[in-house]
Length: 237
Image (cartoon, rainbow, N blue to C red; front, top):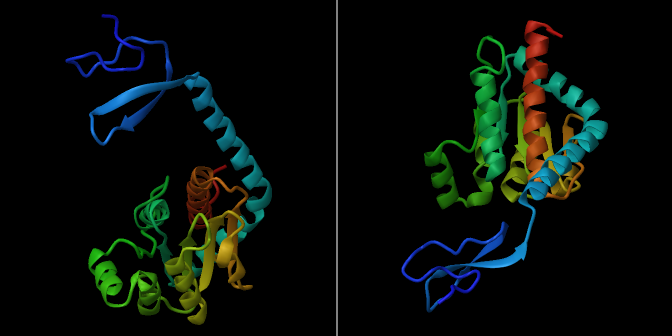
């Protein structure tokens, strides 16, 4: 009997040979997991569209963020040059970006140099779980800013939406301690955009798509690292 298109062959986990297509996974509560063909698709074109969309997001960001990005470099360098430090925080992918950024400072970026003072506030599981358990998740960064932050330090607060409650509270704590805030956001900036003071810098990616915002965020953070190194070591270009 000829197998029906889109179904697994009996007694095997292999589907019948079919032309390239979009495949979805359907889980029947009363049966096994099946692959079902739902529509033909040119996957190469779909992947190409991601590159084009990312390039457009980068170009739009360049047009609006190059100047504030240069200001942010000066703020970060000023803190480090005056024995200050950089704190960074975020949630999910933004937490990973915060760790990545601080690792580039404490380790190195592209050139050898002395380590630079930075702390990622999302890395100490004992602090995160103790504060989260005793005071609530919204306070996990605020309490660390109050513990570690000093006037003249910089908080790099990362949120794709600009509305993460624990990052918002960290910003408020930093401002109360006369720290600079570098808010790295998207989607219009959200609540974080409304908290920006003359001491702060806002890098808001002009996009509403989370993946594009995150991609530009890592570009911005790398650009900040390059700018700091250029001021410390000299411009090589």
